[in-house]
Length: 124
Image (cartoon, rainbow, N blue to C red; front, side, top):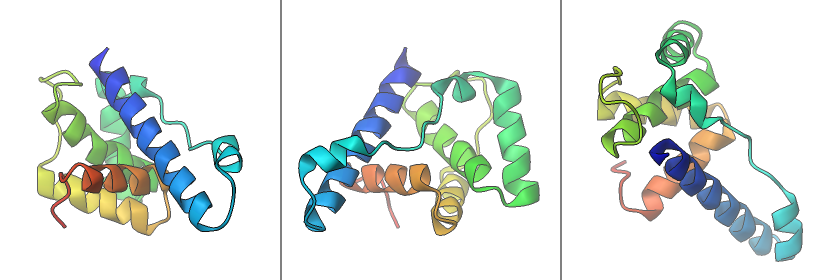
C-alpha cells in the first residue's frame, strides 16, 4: 500500500508540474489536465527480479528507465514503501542515476527530481 502512496505522490507532482508548465505557456488548466504523465507501475518496485533487471540495464545499457527505477527505489525504500530486504543503491548513486535519466529526457525522472526539490529532499 505504501508503494502506491509514493506512486500517487509522484503522479500528483507530475500533474502539478504539467499544470504549472502549461499555464506558464498560456494554456488553460483544462488543457494541462488532458496531458498524462508516463505511467510507471508501482509493482516494479515490489519485485526483486524487476529491480535487478532495471539495475542491470541501467548499468550496462545506460537505459533511462532503468536508471529511473534504480534511483527511485532508493527513495521508496527510505520511506518504507518498499521491502527493506531488497538491495538499493546509495543515495549518491540514486541521485546520479536520476540525473542521468533526466539528462536523457526521461520525464518520470524529471518529475521525481522536481518533486524531491519541492520537498527539500534534493541536495544537488
